[in-house]
Length: 302
Image (cartoon, rainbow, N blue to C red; front, side, top):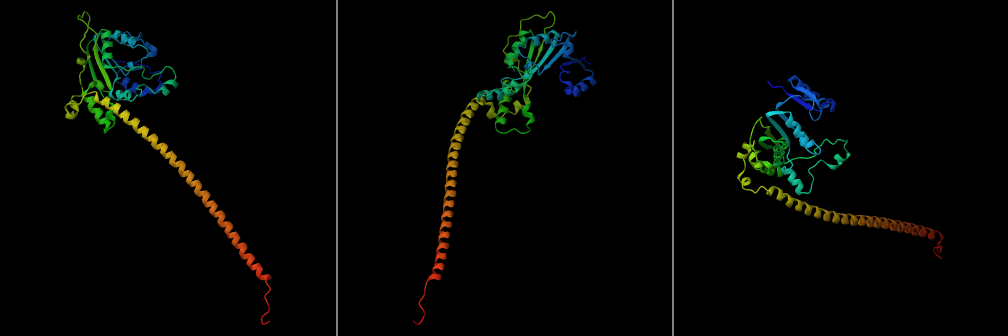
């Protein structure tokens, strides 16, 4: 078996990790808190054959160098470091940029948060991750890129289908990145690997590649982002026409209101005049009846 340590800020999150902690403890994993060992892991007196740092580096403010130096220090010679982190240039992010939108945390949430801000301070691209791993002297670097959010949708439709196949075809557009690198063995010689980072990508989605539609295989990779610019222009035109339609509708509503007002005034005036006419008729009838009382008729037969 393996001796496994799991380090996190368990105490800071109070009971949020109680379930996972129980599972880990029952599996023989030793739980260490940053309150005990420090964020620099100074309290750990061990060399690990494998270090997993998953979904962490994007949360580190300022430089990621202290984190990587620390992970490298506790890694045994010849040991493996596994990192994973969101891909800054994920296709959906590229499309957001093309639309002029941010891919960072919403400014309202970040602005109002209690310090320290625990969201993503910086996300990375494949060449940036490779550069940092080479910077700490690691070798035998490999990179995998994959998606996970789309698998929760159940059914893909419209743009999501097109995006899916574009990401199948081009791993640099995928959502998440994972790197595996090795700390050089003691006495290992050799110059740092300077090969193109693209040659380090190992594609885990071969089944999707085999199913790639022919129409997508021949399409330029940039088209998925360029089309977004066209969609932005189309949306701007739609918004402009919607604004014009709203202005026309407002004018129609104003005129309808005027017509309703005129109609109500006309009806009121007609009713008022009808009442006057009725009153005059009643007065006329009354006067006719009254005159009959005072008319002197000559006697009959005179």
